[in-house]
Image (tube, rainbow, N blue to C red; front, side):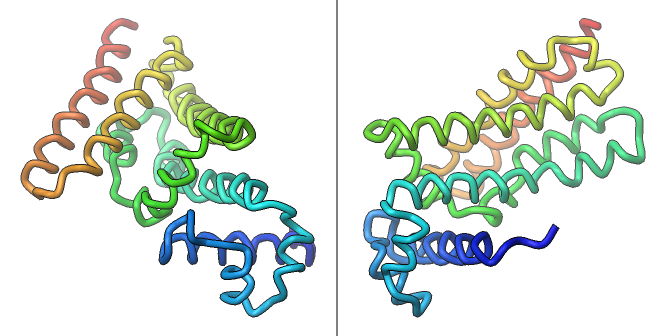
Length: 199
């Protein structure tokens, strides 16, 4: 369905905000700077987003839309097969494409605001819940895993994956990064295989 002019304008503002936050940092991405970047009056941005917090909440929705794309190859594989390729699923969960889909610096700058802003905390909670629900839906499509507690399993997988991403972001040495990433992948694969073995 075609977006309305209002929705197109809001998307343009959010994308401009995101690109500016990538360049100068979230804390330095003011309404005035967004307006200058997009060559529009600041009042137009304020019309759609009366506060920066509302703009950040919309940015979190933008993050979710991009992050959901990481699941597309797995969903495509399930359309042609009746069961999950566990190793490919694990590769998707640890894919560097997450970094291409959305900038980590902007993600964690937004995340830091959950400790001060209840509305942003709620938006982040909804983002993570949506990603977990998508993963749970994928697990339910596998005939063996569908017999298990897919909600619990999705939670377990995300605890490992999210913790791994946080930790791996601090590692600069490529060999150390690869070794730690391989270890975390094995942890996730082991959780999936254990669930299948128990069924």
